[in-house]
Length: 240
Image 1 (cartoon, rainbow, N blue to C red):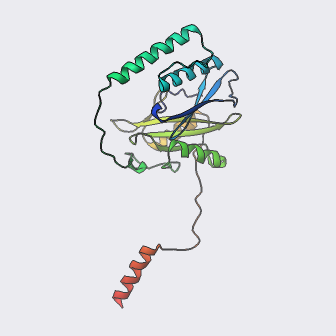
Image 2: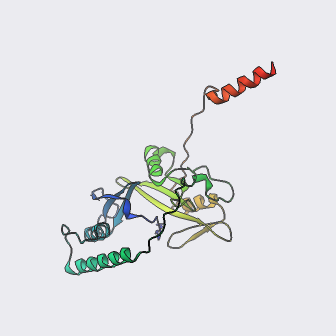
Image 3: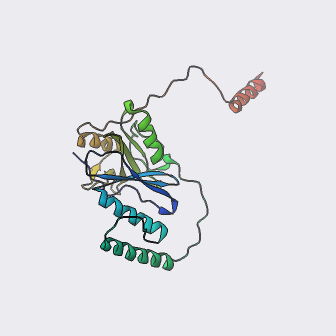
């Protein structure tokens, strides 16, 4: 069963670095891909066909540069649509009420996300990009992990499938006011616990997705850092 995402993560294009075509093949042979590179990582975009990819590039470049790019192959109607969008974006930025910048603060700890019940072993306090790297490096350990969302108030499930190359997907998981969680897909999936979130994704994909379980190496020696070592030595000296 295919899960259709209605929300992944909101991207702030002020961190735009580059945009390029992704020539890797999708299981849908007509599909086309883009790689949007931001200051904090990469986002892969899959669109139905090459024409849609040109239009997506037009949208992204127009928002970033506030100017319709001339290097793309677009129809007159599409160019007019981009011009109207640029005008609206310029007006939006011009009318935006300036606000005082909030005091800087440290980013929220991944473990500060309010969790209900026991945390699944496939939970990792990592970013979106770090999650993709983990799944890419350890394909034998599973292809689905739970992580904090970018906003610090939600969670996300990152998955990896090998379809003529790595394909990553990100599903948002939010906590409900009445308790439990919901997987934000086209037909939202309510779950009582985070364990049920993982079980639901395994079931909906007929076992294609499996929890990421990385075996951590055990320490062979008992060691103390220098600060603790000094404290123990002082305590022992005072008792002698």
